[in-house]
Amino acid sequence: MRAARGGGEVSAMSQSPGMEKWSLMTITVLLALTVRWAVSLGSYSGAGKPPMYGDYEAQRHWQEITYNLPIRQWYFNTSDNNLLYWGLDYPPLTAYHSFVCAYIAKLINPDWVALHTSRGYESQPHKLFMRTTGNPLTSSWRGRAVAGGAVGTVQLCQTSPSALAAQLREDKVANIWCSLSVLIKIKNVISPRTQLKLSFAVTFLSLLPACIKLTVQPSLRGFKFALVSCALSFFLFSFQVHEKSILLVSIPVCLIINEIPFMATWFLLVSTFSLLPLLQKDELLLPYAVTTPAFLAVCLASFSILEKTSAEDLQLKAFSLSLKGYVSWFKSFPRIVRSLFLLSLSLMGILSVLSAALPPPQRLPDLFPVAVAVVSCLHFLLFLVYFNVVILWDSKNRGQKKIS
Image (tube, rainbow, N blue to C red):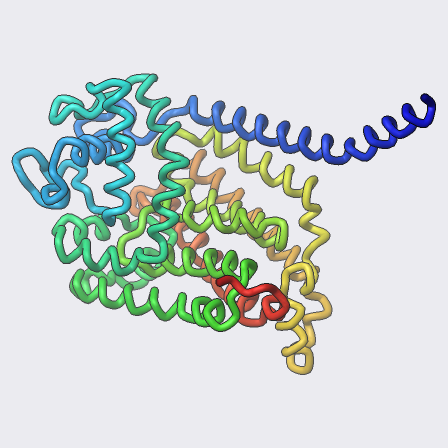
């Protein structure tokens, strides 16, 4: 009996680490859902602001159009599809995503997607529906669209006149074209068609190194880093980019947060900061001010990110060895990286406070949004270089099982 009891105790003790792991995962998921629910209580783009409302209405209107009109009319101006009122100007996969959401909406409440009469529809149940379906479906469908984004954009611009105009409207995005517009107005120098071709070429060239390395040495690890690099290339150099497209980069970054917690945390903080003008416009500064420091605190406690800044921790050991005879400051590399991180946090904090507390000068009404975009873009360019260095000098791929 004692032996049996002893065996049972040993068995229970052996299972406790697994139980603790599942308990921790459960608590983490519940906490994440609670935070997401609390944030969702906030406002949204264009709430109660006719006649165009905002991005929320754009997403709802696309559901209305895709459900009620045949596919051949989705991208063309007709009596039932006024392209000047949130015309569908994203690639076809986004349209199909809207169609799936619309089908579900029709089952719940037909008024949500009724042709013409549903314009500007707002209600708490509909808000809950939009936020419930938008996140998982958008991540899934748009994630698949990243690989074909450049080709899809070219095809779209050949068929939809509104797509060419959309790029000119979204001019406060933290990409290279917006940042360059501070010095030179590209749209005044070259035509939209030439802009499209230029952005396609630059995008293609920027993602080529990571794709070649992944093709030559395929691995799961290399695939995850290539996802980050390619998504970031599309965000920085594509012809038509929305501020929220940085989320398409943040998703694969979350896949590598265990491998490079310091850089992943830094990137996710910058990506959130790049959305500051949009968050301010939609009256979401309070959730931003609460969740951003909370996320940083969690990463500091969970990953000890400030202690993981060595060349080895940042996956740069092979690269540092290749420069050992040329660069002497690699010995103080961890201290330099930590200093840059703290400087970055300070700069983002100052710009956040100024954007929220001070009105911009009358002569420069877009001073703060442009400053946020340029600072974020400079960060993203450095991150792009970093991720490509990690990919190209990665020796761990060679010992991993190749992906079929």
